Image 1 (cartoon, one colour):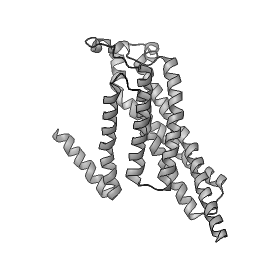
Image 2: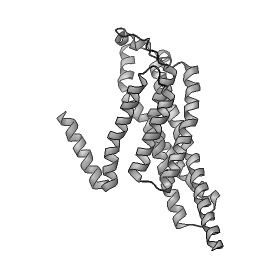
Image 3: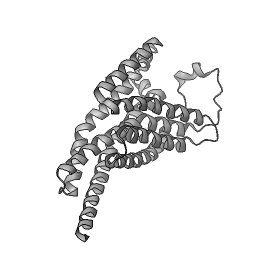
Image 4: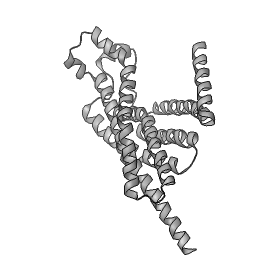
Length: 261
């Protein structure tokens, strides 16, 4: 416990020194997001609750925390929020289809021994649970990519107010190209590092490559990585288009108002 407190204090000090007030808000946002996830998990254990609806609500709240609480309410966070919600909805439908057809929901045979003492008849749709897990795993990367594109696009529009919608969209796409590779690789190494013990376990069980590839646990994690990468790729054109549309529309509206005056 002392080590956790020490690490938390070091993180808080560094975020305060480097990020200032925004760094402090980012630090508290970690605990707020944890509270949202914990509350969502508790509600999901209720058989009458729909995991998909809960996931959408939780994703919306987490997006509000990561965008509006940390970066305040402005044009870049509003467009990033809209793009995030659109991407999550599209990704959710894709994940539901893939999860049901790939049959990665539920537990793998490697987990049977640990779960043999518990009843598996808990009245919860594990297809929806699997989809919810993937969405929760990607929401952070999606909001991060959205704000990373929205913020420089607004700065470009501020310094070049006469820029066309097409050029502004192309600028957003060019930014997305720069961060796409690093974001997807970050997701890959994050999941790989978290499940390194699983690969070691497969080695101890003398699994062949075919058995590893066909393992439900392994496939579920690989699909999570792939879906997260798809979400990061989708958010780039969506954010770029929404930003270019609203920024140019605001300029046209301001021009029309000035002409009338």
